[in-house]
Image (tube, rainbow, N blue to C red; front, side, top):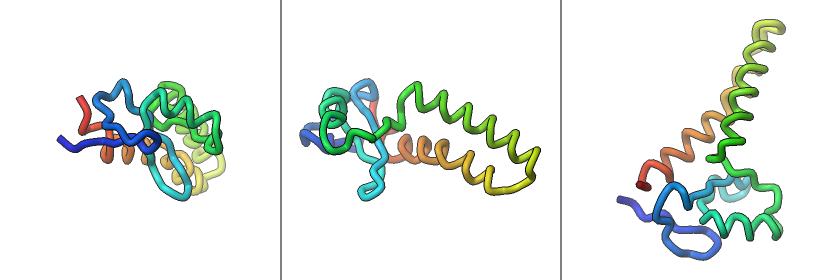
Length: 102
């Protein structure tokens, strides 16, 4: 198994329940412990939304529905790209970090 290291404290993340992945525009998808992410939210990176949370999954589903409706009504492929960005980020987060954790 691959070792996943928290970006804040440098310790190894042992399980999926401890893992929070966030998107940083300059650094990409970053892994954090749950507690380290909570502490990080108080600092300079307060806008980093977790990619692997239940709320993000709900937002992705709603976004896909809205983009599908807009695609049917307006017939522009821009909505397909916009609707697939969040699920692709979630898939990338799983491929890079989550699949290696028990």
